[in-house]
Length: 409
Ligand code: ADP
Image (cartoon, rainbow, N blue to C red; front, side):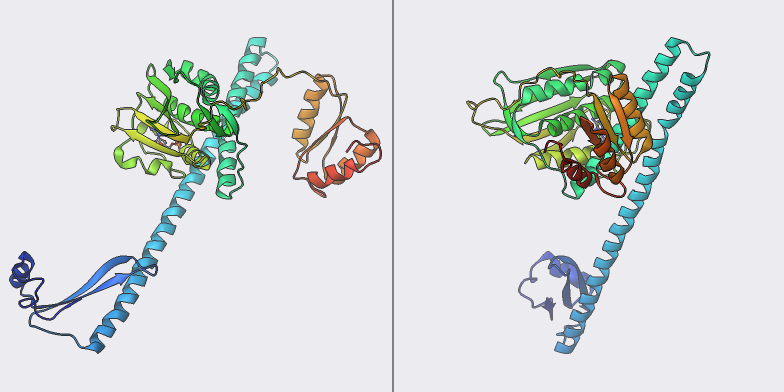
């Protein structure tokens, strides 16, 4: 934009702007927008003159070149800043991850010593075993979240959608967090509409979404607080709102968007002591989005509790057959001859020990080729096969075993 004389330029005359220019001693202005490569305006370079002036063509061309270079420089700096920030967050994440994985190992080591110690009583051993179970559960959850997150970022998570009764999913989620509720003496109220709500969803993944939100509600609420889990149809729509509300520490409004980013934890004295990797909400949001839904958070601020709202499309056809498979009690089957194949020797040995205790005759193999040979000579009823194996992977080994004479296809 070129204004050769602010005194005579029609858009400025009688305007406060021209008064401002006069005060500043400006008579002519030239402005060149700084455009990003994808066409956004990211800034402006302006030149001001004390006298009326109409810059010639060559000066304007020079301005254009300068503007291009400046815009590129700004964009490059921004990109570098983003990379530096991502790198910083990843480093911080690795430190937290190491810490979170290391933490449960000390009690596990202690518990092992207690079990091994000859003077331990039966009660001691039981307490130590319970301790190990809790701590190992913690590590398993962390690692499962990490694996899920990396699968989702690589687009490798497939939903097993089926017709689901939402009430069942919510009730199961509530059962799953009973221990957390009890240990912090939290009250939980579950409210469901009278009519059943059906969704086309993956019951395990949807359960994971609700459990993650309930877990956070427990984690960030002081002892004796309350948690509400409600489901309601959004007014006149085909959407259900699943809300998890708590009376906990709340979230500062400026942090609300950030908490859904990977590796983000709001800094605060309470959070630091809560553990966690800051990937739970990122994962939960992705899982909701895979279901065609949305996840939002609300909070009136620090100390005022939080509310997380999942919005999901529902199935409007209520008459269809219930897709929820009727769960039959699992029947115990004793497998007679079992071949366990795993390159992790401890995994193979421990699983085979458990099976032996349950009455099976067990054998182990530790790579694909060994598995094929063992299957040929031992003729097991069942092979429990790991997938990633040395020499030949589990899929190929299983295929070759199926080709052996007398093996049912
Ligand atoms: P993590 O729980 O492992 O820290 P999440 O991704 O689940 O990771 O949560 C990210 C952050 O969001 C938490 O560290 C916490 O600061 C905040 N947050 C999540 N849920 C709540 C809640 N119910 N109340 C207050 N803050 C919460």
